[in-house]
Structure formats: structure tokens, C-alpha cells
Image 1 (cartoon, rainbow, N blue to C red):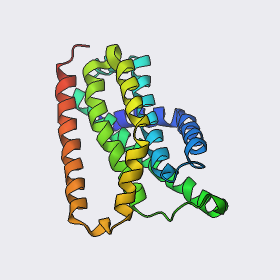
Image 2 (image 1 turned 90 degrees about the vertical axis):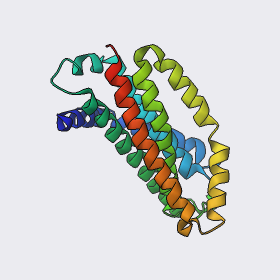
Image 3 (image 1 turned 120 degrees about the vertical axis):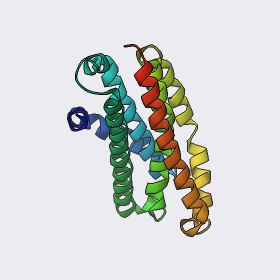
Image 4 (image 1 turned 60 degrees about the vertical axis):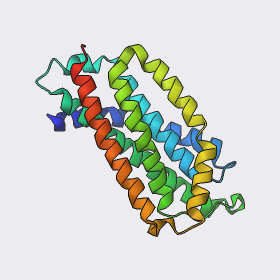
Length: 209
């Protein structure tokens, strides 16, 4: 059943691919010429916009009310959404990296810095942490509170620009890749994802649709 749910999510992703490209174009045009941390912000904003778009499709089409009438467990519904969120994140972060790599080669006057694996890893981790808070709230409040949740999260995302730039400067200022703290942070994010997943399952299982 999980395969069928993932196929449904894949169809939704395919049909909204133009939205992902639009988000990439808008955020790239807004951030690349102005901010040195644009590679991170474009990936983060695009990923969350796609995740948000996916949840809004569920609400608009009343997908959850339909899915729970099928021989599908709510656990599988949640699993599919988390896996899809990871797919959105990878797409957005890697696409942002690719765009910035091309910009760096084509528009030398912008003086874009050299990019490393940390420029992929950090945005992906930030999106995962945001998602781990967003999805439990989405499944707990669903249609009634989604507009409020989305508004709050987008306001928080707008405030990410400066903290992300400062954080990346700290990382670039030392060999963070060999720092044991990096592995502790990654382990902490993994624990957060696991905890978020089980909390979401518990909330969605108890929810009366």
C-alpha cells in the first residue's frame, strides 16, 4: 500500500513540477544577485514551498478523507508524506546547487564563493528540521488551522536569511567537516525526524476525519 501512496505523491509531484521550477526561478531571481547565502535560501524556500504546496493539494482535494476509507493504514499515509518531503528537499537543494554552479561559471562579476558539500547538507538539514515541526502541526490541525500554520512558518522563513548567513560563515571559518559536533548535530536531526514521525502518526491516528 505504501507503494501506491508514493505513486500518488509522485503523480502530484509530476503534475506540480512547473510549480517547483517557478519557485526556483522566483527565489533565484530574488536572492542570487543580492545575497552571498543565496544558495542556501533558494534551496530552503523552494523545498518548503513545495512541501506546503503538497499539503495544500491534500486539503483542497480532501485526500485524507478519501484515503482513510481505503484499506490503507494511517501510518502508511504519514510515511508517504515524510518520504515525499525528503524528495522535495533533495530536488530543491540539488537544483539550487546546480543553478548556483552555473551562475558562478557564467556571471563571474557576481563573485559567488566556491561551494562545498556543506552547501548542500546544511540547507537539507534545515528543511528537515522545519518539516519535522510542520508536519505534526499539519496532521493535528489539518484544514482548520493550515492557513494559520502556513502564515506563521513563512514569516519564520523570512527571518532565516541572516541566521543562515551567520551560521554558514561560522562553518566556512573552520574545518567543520571534521568536527565531531557535526556528527552530533546530524544524529540530533535524525532523532528529531524519528520523534516527529511517531508523533505525527499518533496525532493522525487519533484524529477524527
